[in-house]
Length: 103
Image (cartoon, rainbow, N blue to C red):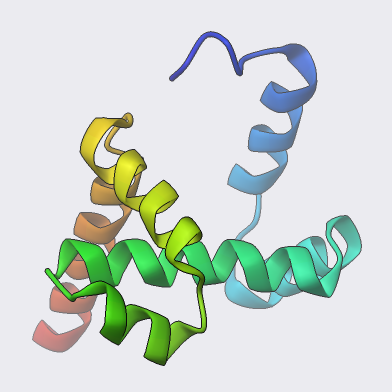
């Protein structure tokens, strides 16, 4: 994690997120914590990152998500030079999906 970001308040936020047990609790918590637009913006960035990791081109991403090219570029920089947070999440989602399909 970037030490520039770490402080007690952010540690508390992450502990709160990690305490959530299911999707319904996530909806309740994030609706209380964020505006609807903030949630939509965060989720859009995640979808943009997924599409970029799947080698989609900018025009397809713009058309499917409505994200600006500036947002797509910013997310792409995170994928290229960031802390691999997106990659970790995408791999865990794939693993969970595979496990559920095997059941």
